[in-house]
Length: 389
Ligand SMILES: Cc1cc2nc3c(=O)[nH]c(=O)nc-3n(C[C@H](O)[C@H](O)[C@H](O)COP(=O)(O)OP(=O)(O)OC[C@H]3O[C@@H](n4cnc5c(N)ncnc54)[C@H](O)[C@@H]3O)c2cc1C
Image 1 (cartoon, rainbow, N blue to C red):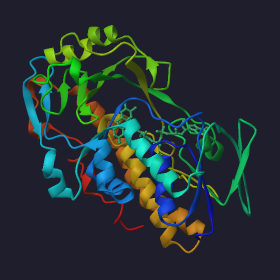
Image 2 (image 1 turned 135 degrees about the horizontal axis):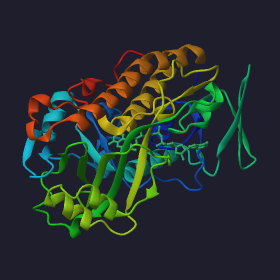
Image 3 (image 1 turned 90 degrees about the vertical axis):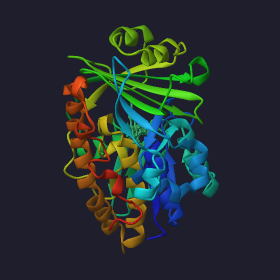
């Protein structure tokens, strides 16, 4: 098994996590990324304890804490009054309860740490400027063609190319995509443009009627990441880096409390983006022959449980464990999919349920007993290093 050449398409957080986990398990891995240079968008990312177990294992605790911070405390606040409705205790309680903390990071920082770790094992593992176009599978391997005219051969293919996965299309054909009715804006605001006394506690979601504004600190508390969710009847642009005008967000959230207004007013020019949330049905099967899917390519989900990247991270570690445990590659891919598909399909569905809950709630009667999140679903108790594969 260790003689296998594994090809990964897509060097996002999922692709790099899978690559690192496979490398550490002793496999040769080549990653092909469409972007000309490696990087991630400017945005925050929440890593819950179930994902943190994997990152600690792959990067080491110090490297993880160099790029991510544990919010001391969090809260759900009333959108208009700013009054705390529910305290969400994140600090040491998570580590005590689940054996790993709850983290918040700048996506580019975590992505950079994963890329550095991959390159430390194999400096030539990552190939940029390679947009995957075609796949051929045969008895002795897979052959890929990229749009730049180059190609690659290997024994197995892991498609980690995100929500609009070309590998998924090559395996399972084109599919229906539908707009969910939810849209969002995001931005990053330097803390030195804000009154620190206002940005308390570290992590807050402002619950409004049919709208939510969430914000938390990243980069050692020097930046505030925000995501503002609302509804629309129609949306045509898919992709989550469409430049937006912050005055549109200010208009949409004009009845939100002074903290939200301060964050929006301090958003630097060019630092606000918008996107519409699109939906795909769960696939009944991921693996076809020598190729399988991982991360958003396998199970794209709405962000209402903040679990998309965490599921991709879990996938990567479980895939590497399945490869080690199995006698041959068909068994490895079967074990990987059996271990992962049910859980990720459940999280896809529950993300939708949570969206409906968030948009239909009445902030004037919101209490701890009506609060639901990934933790109340039991998702944090999963450890990808120890689950059966
Ligand atoms: C606003 C928002 C907030 C979120 N917040 C959280 C959060 O707090 N916590 C969380 O866990 N998740 C969160 N998510 C979800 C998370 O961002 C995704 O689930 C995660 O990025 C998926 O990682 P991935 O590697 O599977 O895909 P991606 O990050 O999309 O990476 C795919 C990679 O493949 C490359 N690629 C694409 N097509 C090709 C091709 N044809 N050939 C070669 N390369 C290709 C891309 O360039 C990219 O580098 C959020 C998502 C959104 C939209």
